[in-house]
Structures are given as structure tokens and as C-alpha cells.
Image (cartoon, rainbow, N blue to C red; front, side):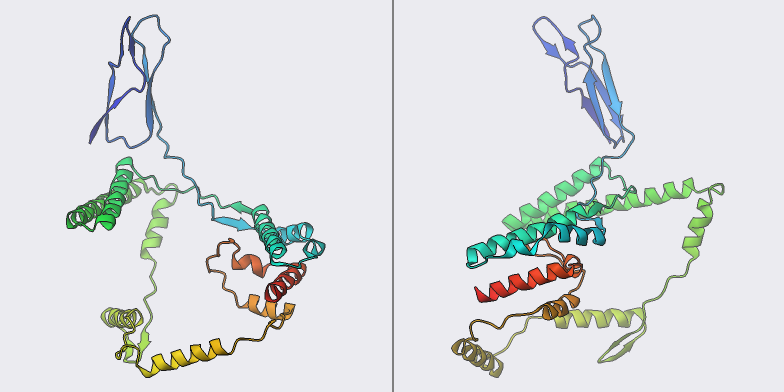
Length: 315
């Protein structure tokens, strides 16, 4: 692939015109570069400077990939959230303001006690691969909006082209790695040690039909399980099935007998028991408070949280 790169600024200034005369022919150069003319000589033809960067593009780390000092998180909560700040909640408006203040304080404490995880090993993606990914995503979006079979065919064509190019890059990276191996820095021995290391096999899978040992049997069990779990629950009778009648009767009974108001208040022990059952790998809600933050609440924050929940139940 050969690309012509024209300067962004004119290289010749005449009496009544300004034009660009110089071109740079770049062959398979996928790194960032820029071309500019310099108004430094007395001639009307400016010299041109070409800046080539042999470093990869600046990679922005994931802002959500952070490490947190939980002791600093707890100390920040203790110092910035006071029990006196939550007194005088007598109406829903004030309650909403206090909840917003509590949520903002928790997020601020987490941000204060966290720092991003720096990852210095980033793979460089050539510009033509970035362009292919952009074109493929654009074609997919265009097909989803129009449902035109021609656009679908174009999307599949770009997808296959991208797969082939990625496979070529992967093979080229592997070849480059093999060529760089030598015995002086022990890279050759580390590579062969990794390749000779035995991989653990997938254990046997058990199901209602028996135990699967071979790869084909395991694949069939997984396929049947996914098919059963994700199949639509269709029942005949247009709502006259006994299960439908039971659900309808249960709902009607619930709406006819409303729960007692006000609901009985909770206590810190009940809140702590619920917190212990939270899973760390769950995504946060709109308040951006993850379960790991809640699990690291100090006792004073648990008391304030209990107080807010009781106010929610009462108001």
C-alpha cells in the first residue's frame, strides 16, 4: 500500500498565489507522522520538514480500571460524613437531598482512595486496521437501520476482510517474536518452557443424560443446555393454562390485600446480613456505587444507611 502525504501548509509563496509542490511517498508506514513547511529561508520555496514517530499511539487506559486503598476509603467516609448532617428529615424532598449528599460522599471517597492501574504493554494497531474496524462498524449500523440485504452483504464482506487482516497481523507478530528470541536474555528458554507446559484438560461434564468425557460429548451437552435455557416458554391455551390462572389469582389476591403501612423498620443487623450476600462482580446502578464499596462501609456509615432506609419506608 502506497500513500501520498501532502503538506498541510503551502510550500511556495508567490506574488498572487500560494501552492504546494512537495509530496512524500510513504510505503507501508503505519505510524503517526506530520508534514509542515518552514518559513525560514529567503527563497519563496519553503523547506519542508517531515516528522515520523516510531512510537505507538498514546493509549488511554480504562478509567474504570483502578486500585483502591479501602482503609483510606473508610477514613475518608468517617471524616466527611457526620450523623448530625442527616437530622431533620421530615418530608420526601429533604430525604432526596440527603440521599444525594450521601451518594456523592461515597463516590468522592472512592475516587479519593483510588488510583488508575497503568498498563504499559499495549499492542499497536495499524491505521488501516483501525479504518477497517470503523468501516465495518459503520456498515453494521447502516444495515441495522435499513435491514437492506445489500447492506448486510457489505457488512459481512468487511467483517471477513477484517478477520483476514487480523490473522495476518497475528502471524506477523508471532514471526517477529520468534526472530527476536535469543539465548543471551533467556527469552528463548522462557518461550520453549511456555510451549512445553502441559495444559489442563476440560474436566468431565455431568448431565441428566450421563457423563460426557470426549470433546464431542461435552459440546453436545453444552449445546442442549443452552438451547433449553434460552428457548421461549410457550404455553398453549391463550392464557387458559392452569399456571396462568394461578399467577392471575395470586396477583389479584396481592392487590386486594395491601401490605400494612407503615412497613416495619429495619435495623443494622439486617442490613449487614444483606451486605454479606452481595457479589463483588456485579455492575453498579445509576449511582455508580459498586458492591465492594458497600462491603467496606464502616459502622457509622451502616447506621446512617439504616436510618435513610427507614426514612424511605416511613415517608
